[in-house]
Image (cartoon, rainbow, N blue to C red; front, top):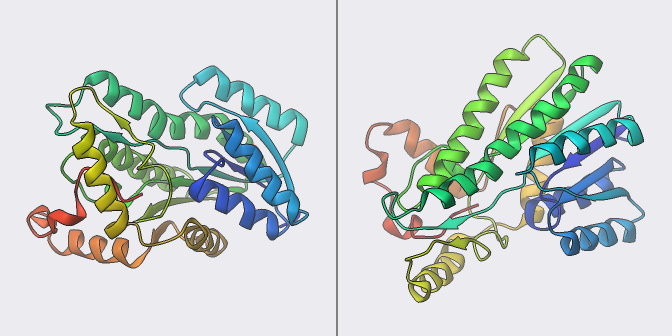
Length: 275
């Protein structure tokens, strides 16, 4: 992996940080980005502690021009010959039902979780086509396979990431560029606890729901998720499910496509999210 550059968004914490550390331990070169500069520095220090190769860059994936500038900088400064683009950056939202969700919050989430993935791919895919190699790894969610209550914005974005990835799989089928959609189940990251709470929501109730959710549903570690993702990339898997919960829910949806939502325990779909 010495000639491989992993370009990872959302690398300041959670799955992104764990994947940056793991990829660097396998002697890949890591270009890590995040809007969280403190988290990025933590990632850099952890990689450097194991004598890995890493460069970090602040990047807001909701900013189209910032992504264009970032891609130009990467091409100029690093001239990567084998790219693994991991579109991992994402946010969460506690907003209640769709009717209760303010449009500005819905659009805020979509701009990061869906359009961030699209813009990053738009910026780096031409270079990958020019080289006729590479991997595009788009982190969706089990909520990109199944819809759940209270997560209209998040599910819309993650279903969009899956659909976008599936289109790329068709369009790139005759190239050496592999596309993977990643669907984590419950992962112990800080994305749920850092979720935006929409105006009008009961903050105390949201906090109570979140505490219960984190205790009961977040069962896998970011390090485990990173291992599964890396193995999936190496095997060229087009769809990567993370965790027993994700696999069970995926089977449930495929078995009962018309009414799976009636069979999922309410405890699995409270006001927080599984990824």
